[in-house]
Amino acid sequence: MRLSVCTARLTGSRGILTLGLQPTRKVDVPAEAEATPRSPSTLSARDVEVLAFEALEWAHPGVKEEAVRVRFGLSFARYYQMLSALIDQPDAVRHDPVLVYRLQRERDSRTHARAARSLTVPLAAGL
Image 1 (cartoon, rainbow, N blue to C red):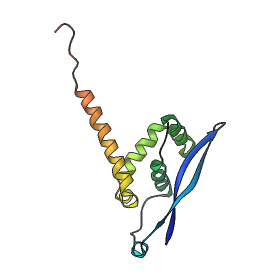
Image 2 (image 1 turned 90 degrees about the vertical axis):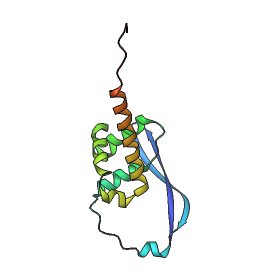
Image 3 (image 1 turned 180 degrees about the vertical axis):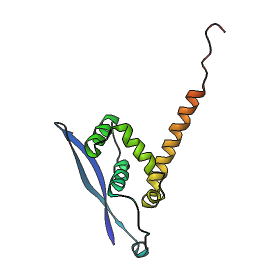
Image 4 (image 1 turned 90 degrees about the horizontal axis):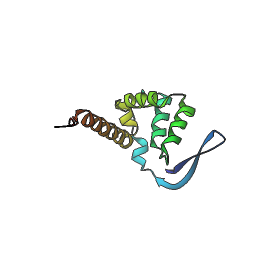
């Protein structure tokens, strides 16, 4: 079986964002991979869409924030709360392990950096 691998590009004009997919290459899928039975996933269609959205690369942070508002109807903070809960689900790991582990590592590094900043005690003036 041959699958097309696509590259996503988000473009916008006049406040309208468009997601365009361009085929980049063909990939051969081994026959045994097709026949491997998968356990039923409890991920909702929205969860799968969020994971696909996170797999996209963004040139500018503001573009992603606006795309979150348009596509999901959520504030950026609420989106990241939902994403954080999603990447802790075993079904999300089974769905796309490379992406989910990367997102978990990024979240953990931000958490550690935040904790390190809060533990730093500034020197008092005059000491």
